Image (cartoon, rainbow, N blue to C red; front, side, top):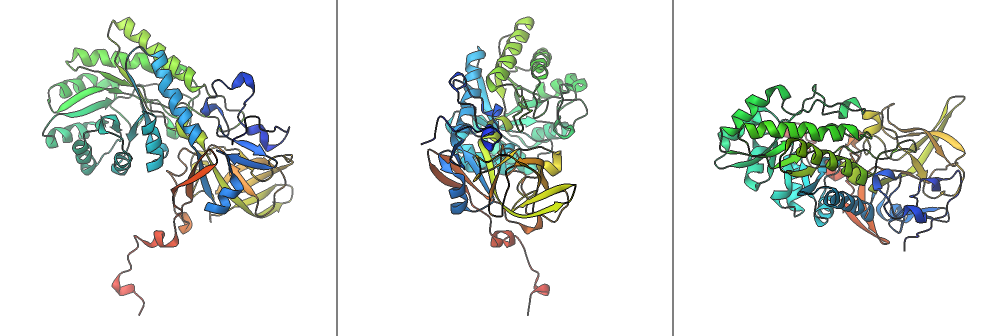
Length: 464
């Protein structure tokens, strides 16, 4: 069983455990935790979901993604229940599966009553195979292929139309009304990484607000475009609540203009983007408070315009899945550069977590078999790839480590596996789902043969 009173030692890895003191147990918001909700420590050893991390690595190998069932489900439930609590109208939470698309994750969010958003034909196929009904699937993307549009039409999901070419193509190929939503650029900026801001005007996503009259006229004049609603998204890993609340007012203004153009808008998609706690200094709002602010602003905007409440859709990704997963690595070599730094190398790196080298993302780590030992060393955690920039964590505070120790990097559920590569021809890791002391494989570790499966050796180059 998972301990409800984990040991806590000052200046040790245990400081990262979820706060389970009596006053905090009522509503732990997963996105505000450094570790999964079930994390606890027995002696010197870290457990997730009642499973000893060291034993998981022995059984399934290293590196290893470890996904906690309870943390993921709790986040789903908190989003779902908060919208019911704060929004008087109809609501639907859909998981932004680009964060981590696989059958098991899709099946969990389906079982919690959520829908899903996809951005490719393969993500659509995954969602359908996981049993998610087309009515709860929303297909995003700024450059969907003709094949992807045809697949979306065939299955009956809702298309989030992003540009004129997509609209014109749908008019040409559709033989019956296609459910669509229009993605609009709201012109709202927030403090986040340049690469993950999508709401400001200079963005590759969505129709420009100056095109609204022309856009709404075009849509209302083509019966095959069944426009259900409007969508906007302002970015990712956001801690500020005001931009999301401002978005509600912008969307309601867009809705009013669409209605005046003869479009019966029934849904507003407010996007997602709520941030998570990657480090001690991160202070994101809770899921409950984020949803409350969005709902209150949307209700107020509708009342000000004297219009009925539309169905509200939200599409969280990172804040659903990131904190539910950790990645376990095995420590290998160490290199000390006198008066500069000490490098501690692990058996993974940028191929299983490209976010540090891509976004300069910062993570925290613990040593799973030395959880009670003082954090007496400052080291740089280096990956094994042939790239000088393959650095997972700079200035990591760790206990003294040895080859064979297990380094666990926290909050790796979002954009780690989904952005993983085979750089240096390294197979992608396995992933397991842990719950109540049991672990189930949800992604097999790739093999050398998997990497060769798509290779074709021309006859002229074959060995004689």
